[in-house]
Every structure is written in C-alpha cells, then in structure tokens.
Image (cartoon, rainbow, N blue to C red; front, side, top):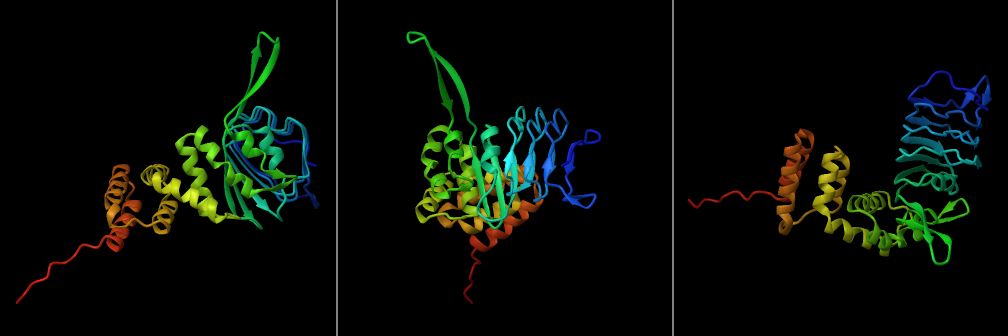
Length: 277
C-alpha cells in the first residue's frame, strides 16, 4: 500500500513495484486536495481507499488497469474536471462502473488491450424538486448520462445496450458530444452491430463538415484522415471538401492542408485539356 505522497506534483506515475513488493493499494485520502492533473496507475493496483482523490479539483486524466476490485466510497468526490479515462483491459471485466458512478461529468473512456473501444458518456446531474401539495421532495435526473452508465452487467460492459441509447442521446445531448460518441464507435467498432453502425454513419454523414471542423480545430489530423478515407466524398460533395480545405487554411494548419491537397488530387483530379493536331 502507498501511504503517502511527497510534494504536490501535477503528474504522477505510480510504480508497479516498491521495495520489491507489488503496489496493489492506495491509502485513503492519499491524493486529497493535491494539485494532481494526470495520474498513471499500474495494472497491479486493485484498491483505492476512501476519498483517495477527494477534492483533486485539477485532475482531468486518469490511466489505470481493469483489475480494480475495490474503489472506496467518495474516492472521486470533488473531482469535477475529469474528462478522460484510459483503461488497459485484461479480459472483459473492469472497475470502470465504480468510477463512472462517482463522476457525473462528460467522459471519454478509451479501452485498450483485450478490448479496443472508445466510449463517450454524457454528463448528468440530479436535482431535488419539491412537490409542495404532497409535501415530498422528488429527484429529477437531467441528461442521458445515468442511462449510459447503467450499461453494465456486473463488471462487464454491454455494448449493444450502449448503442441502443443513441436515440435518447440525440434528444438530450449537444451536437459536439453526439459527433464524438458516433465517431468513437466507428473508429474502434468493438461489438458494433450492423444496425448500430448504420445509425452512427448516418449521423456522421449528416454532420460531416461540423465533425471535420471539430477535428481541425483540435489538431486531430490522423482522425480527419480516417474520416475522409473511410467515408470518402464523391464529386457531388466536392463543395464539402472545398469548405474543409478552407477551414484548414484559416486554421493555419499546414500539415492538414497538405494532407487535404493530396486527398483532392486523388479524389477530385483535374482533367487535362486534350489537343487535336
């Protein structure tokens, strides 16, 4: 068990072994109130003590293995900036559900190892609303995030149930989130059915330019290349290509402009004039 942390670092990589012993547990309140932003945990860690990250207000990225057996109560209380989880999967089961139950903010979860997938979970929050005539306090849940977090059978994630919730998300979530969710499932289509693939592809095609703009703005050139090669634009949509190229030019991204120019040369070749002698 790691019982103390010296200093107040923003990036911490917990070792697999200390003094010849495997690191399997983090003591309660270990990181409480620290300035921690990024944390890397080895696959050996199986337990996080109570309030282990209490009020780590700057923590935004967490990398860990799937072998969690016990996450103490309130471990992530006050961690409102967590946005990304990297999980190394060893089999189909994981402790992701326990973390998701404590973090209500929008999250991107990237799975690697025995499972390869990108999953986005919407934000949700609960609100107490008073029913004055009945003199009772009712709880209202806002956002589809709770429904997405319930796609587990024990510690195993149900991808089909996750995909079925997209229609609900379309009614409640913003366009940016929906693009990321659909694109994530198409990039790494773990257990993606044909029906689910179709719904995501239809959404991406309907928001092609908006997604391209998002990728350009966030300098995600490889993902833009994946989008345009996997779902190529035909001549009837050359105006879409021209707009994407214009956006990259305005962003001053020379690498992306170069990639798009080559794409245009291949997919929209300029006909050469012929001459009669």
